[in-house]
Length: 404
Image (cartoon, rainbow, N blue to C red; front, side):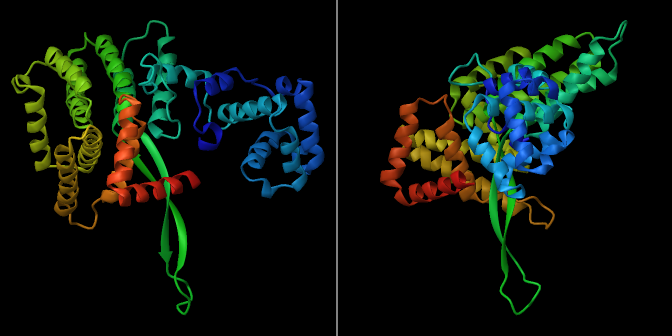
């Protein structure tokens, strides 16, 4: 999905959805036709019309596989409307023909389930279509749309479970929705024992929480609950899942320093699911929750707590509450060490290094538009002056990210 979509915005998905569906439509444009003829003259592989789109997309990713003249054609047409039009057509064509994904439905799902743009709360950003849960939502919603067209249909367990796929996928995107792919150099023993080890580069995928996905999840769960309120068994099961998610979400927002959002969710939780444990203040509830989770912590809870505590520590450091900031960072380190120590068997899944988590938490804080710009810049300024070693490491790390 990366080469087809990249960091696409809503305008990009509009262009994909409105792109011509057939070769004859795009080739009818005289300027695009010139591009097609030029590529066919530059490299004989483009003579095969059936493989033209595939070869074109390969050319855009790795021109070394083709005749140099083909790459020159791309340079000659660069920044022209013809190249832009054919490029969008080729990507939309690949989505439709190879992956069976309809860009118009992808655009619709972006608007319904995309992460909230905190700079403009009424706007949804596109889903990350590199993430498997975005595809789970796509196929579940496609199935539901087909089912809705059936005459005299009865809601079945299949339909309930398909709605659950959407809900669970949105929950997964909240907990692990941000994708970062980074390179890891690994020394591999040489086949010839007399030769030194070789360094190979492996790519690893790191997932981190995306708090922007809470609102899409919450709205969808309320809709699903309304849909199945007459089915007592399903309704109660869905309520249990929703209640647990609200508990997790308010704790994540609280630890990330978004007390207003945590308080809002706490109010919703008390209204919808009044329980004795909620008859306390938000602060007291959060403290009890943390103590309970440390007793039987799993990798997802550990990662969420560590990242949330680190983000809050950066917030506190930015507002010059240094003692509290270092306390949060210390606690995050203790949770990391606690998790690593209690799972000593060789089959466990390790947490990423604490240093790596600290870098990602700083990136998350700096990109968090719910915090004022001046506050985020103030944090970076303080780190640069007062913690120069960490700032230098962060700059070096960000440079590696930019290179990758």
